Length: 137
Ligand SMILES: C[S@@+](CC[C@H](N)C(=O)[O-])C[C@H]1O[C@@H](n2cnc3c(N)ncnc32)[C@H](O)[C@@H]1O
Image 1 (cartoon, helix red, strand yellow):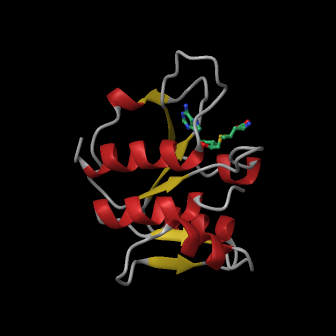
Image 2 (cartoon, rainbow, N blue to C red):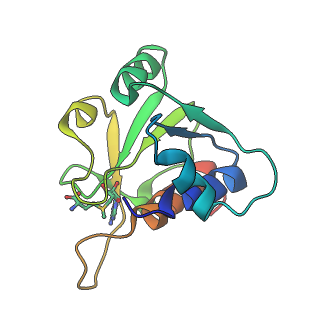
């Protein structure tokens, strides 16, 4: 929703050796360019139908990990580094992860908060979890 988030996430993906999966909507390329100051090619997959793509990934054996504040979520400190192909799912800035994608999650991870805000910026949340999954923190 906020222009720089996708590009910021793309930089984190590049730093930890991950790829970014995005829908082919018209504003996506501009948003990627805005927050991404890297000057070399990065790994971006454009998928026509993200929920269908998630279903295919799950069937093929990928672990689908949602990043969301949820009752059943594990805390970030308890999340081990990924030992298998893992897809990390982030939610919309105002509405979170949609129900049809929540149904496909194998697990969820949350980042505890003690301040007054309801949630973190999505690029911050995604970057923290990516570093933990990569075993670099
Ligand atoms: C601004 S938040 C969305 C808040 C939205 N009002 C909701 O109901 O989910 C955008 C996304 O960032 C991620 N996120 C933000 N803060 C988080 C936290 N403390 N723990 C886990 N994920 C978080 C989630 O993926 C969330 O869907």
